[in-house]
Structure formats: structure tokens, C-alpha cells
Image 1 (cartoon, rainbow over the protein chains, first blue to last red):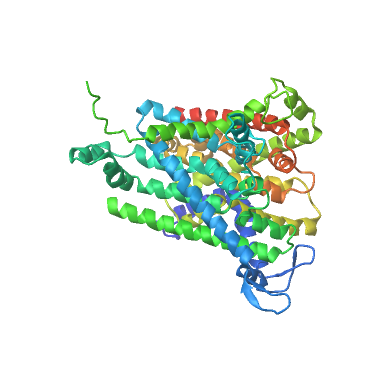
Image 2: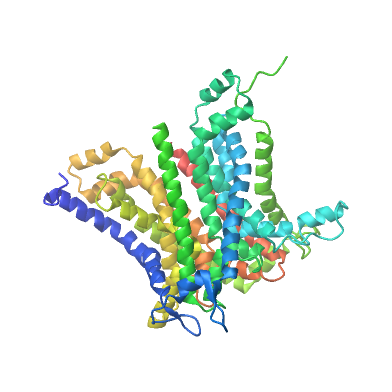
Length: 303
Length: 266
């Protein structure tokens, strides 16, 4: 039937690719094509005023992890880059944990409401999700800046005399990322909780399990796919975050996204920027593959 | 009488959930409240006033950025939906086909690849094209936005198509309707809510974008979000709150409309 010699199948196939053409052209021009160009640029030599010189070089990739001493030509690890890598991964992991600790009970709360109310509760989670990320970051900034709401309140209550410097610290970036990415944790956990069979929970209690044991041994394993999906959905954009660390970290607490931008601005090292981008993409891909494997394994267990 | 044992209850969960909703909305609500502040502080309340809305409205930069944002979001929504409808038709009808994994990967790429990476990639390519052609206009932004809005336009349309009853289309074909007439008179009327939902998601996605716009725009092509990002480096006045609140209102209205639109199809 699906043989290419069959004229009907051939026409269907031609039709299909004809219909797909506009989308594929746009995406090739402005999504996947440029990504290939990034790969090429990462192997070129930086130009003096930004841009590249068409001379092959692996210096861009080399400087992702190493630096050569200016005088002694001695090779060392690029500490500045490594610390930014480390900070990005650490902050993203912490963001994932914080959003889980807050998001899991919230998803559970919504999933245990009467069926006709759940959509409304979910709408309350979805609205912030579709609200401009920059605006939400800005809202956090107003809250925690020196003359912001939190400090004003603490001073008015006489708890502190001097405002606590929260803005432009790792703490600020962490709070901001947890705030903006929280809905991404709640949505998938809720999706798998909604389908959960509560008679299994009841069976747990019939067997004299405590609430904690039911949570740990019955509910958590059942909604594990949602938890994994939520963690990936939070971890991946945290790792590539650019706006939140820029606004709340104030250009001091750099993350990978800001380090990449730097190479295209003041750094004037486009090949290094390209190599750093691909490194970020690589880490994200590994995280996604891990997710696909974990999700596949889960399905194997239950299916 | 003791309360009956509630198997759904988990100690502390309700409290955390309530705290979560408060935390989620408190910063946004404060931001909106201070947009009405009569004073120029974003933390000390000095009475109600519209002055920051007026001053934002009269600010030339804000005006042109608003127009640019709305034009860009409309173009991106129209073009990405126009690409997404045929793409969704091609991928939902007639089962799976050779290369469908590739097509899905391509369509979803903007969702998978970190925004900063896409932004850098577009910067590199468009910089080269700008040098080669001398064209520095609005087209780059429209193309970039159309591409990353495409998956958002595609998803609701595809979902709608998958939920549709094929027998009506078959009946149309049985009555000697040409494929175009069947599409025009049978498929399209049923597909409208999906198309509208997709276009709205694309519109909001484009309107909210900061990172890609920041990297792609030429000089003097600020959209509202990139204008605001620039302002945040300086001392912030409630004018930024006023702009934020207006943008917020647009997003909330769109999301609510989307929510009810997708509810009616059940």
C-alpha cells in the first residue's frame, strides 16, 4: 500500500510535503539552519571588532574550559568559566528542588479538589505562566530591592535598621527563577495526579500505613513521570536563563546565558560564544535524553 | 464526633498550596498597585493617580515600542498560524509517514533549544545577511518571531484536528466534493476554535519575547519588553509598572479567552 510506486500513495506524499513546505522553510531559515551556522562559527577565528575571520581554529572550543597564560603560555583551567558553569548548574538544581517542594503540594491540592473546581485552580497557575517573564522578574525585583516592599516592611516592623542587600546576589537569582518557573513544575505533576487512582491510596491506609508512608510509597511512585517531566521543564530553562540573572543578578552573578551574551558584546569572541552555546545545548540535550529514558522506563513498569 | 478520616489529606499540603498561590500573585499585584502611585517611588504609597499611565502614554519611545510590539505580534501570529494549519493537516491526516520524526523535531525545535542559543544563532546569521544585503528592516524580527511562535500555533490546531470526527470529511468526499471544497466547507468550520487558539498563543508568545528580540533587533527597533529591559538598568519609576500592568492586562485577557475557547470544545 505505502509503496512509492502506488500512484495514490505518491500523490498523498507529494500533497503532504507541499502542505509542510511553508512551516519547514520558516523553521529552516530561522531555527535549525542558524543552529548549523553556529556550529561552523565555533570553529572559526574571532575578528578584531566582533564577527569572525574565515580561518579554521579550535580556540573557541579550547577556551570553553582552558586558558593559556599570557606570559608563560602555561595551560590552566578557565576558572571564570568553570565557576559560571558550576553556578548555572547549581542554581538550576536548587531552582528545581525549590519549585518541587512548593509545586508538588500545590498540584496535590488542586488534584484533590472537586472535579468541577480543578480547572479554575489550574487557571490560577496558568495565568502567571503566560504572563511576560520579564514583568514577573521585574515584580520580584521590586519586592526584594533595598527600598523594596520586603525591606520597607522589615524596617517598619523594627526587625532590621538597615535594608538587607538581596538584589544582585545569587539569592535574588534563585528566588526569581523559582518564581518564574514554578508553574512549569505544577502543570505536569498535576497532569499525572489527576489520573491517579485514589483507591490505591485507600488500600495503603487499610494496610495501616501512615500518611507519610502513603505519600512516599504510593503517591510519589504513581506520579513519578509527572515529577520527572516537571523537573526537566524547570531545569532546562533555568540552565539557559538569561533575563532573570541579568535583571536580578545585576551583571555580577553571571549564568551561562549571560556569559554567552558577553562574548557577542564586550568579549568580541564570537567563536567562543558559539562554542559556549553549543555546550549549553549539549547539556540540555543530555538532560532531555535522561528524561526520555526515565519516562520510557516508567511506562515499561506500568504498561 | 470525630471527623471522618480523609484519605486525600496530607499534613501541611493545603498550607503550602495557599502560600504558593499567595506568592505567585503577591508580586504581580503589588506591581499593579504601585503603577497607580502618585509618588515616584515603587515602595512608598503616596496616593492614587493615573500620572504614570499618562506619562507612559506620552512617552514617544513607549508609543513607538508599543506599536512595534503589536504589529510584530500580529504578523507573527498570522504567519505562524498560516504555516501551522497546513503543517497540522499534513501531520494528522493519513497516519504516520516517512520522515515524520524529523518533521516533529523541526517544528518543536524552538521549544527544546534554549532561547539564548536560538538568539545567538539568529544574531550570527542575520548579522551576515545584514552585511551582505544592506537590509536592516523589520523583516528579521518578523521571520524570527514567526519561527519560534510556530510550535505554539501548531499545538492547539493539531489537538483540534486529532479530536475531529473524520466521517464528516469522508461524507463530503463521497458526495464528490473536491479536496479543497471539503476542507473549506467541512474541515475549516470545525477547525476554527483551534486556529483561533493557536493564533492567540502565538500572539502572546511573540508579545512576551525578550531574549530573541534583544539579539535580533537593529538599532531603534525596541519592542516594549526590550525597552523595559533597557529601563531596568536605571532608576526605575512607576512608569515601568504602568507599562507592565498594561501588558499584563493583555496577556490575562488572551489567556482567559484561550481557556474558555478550549473549554467549549469539550
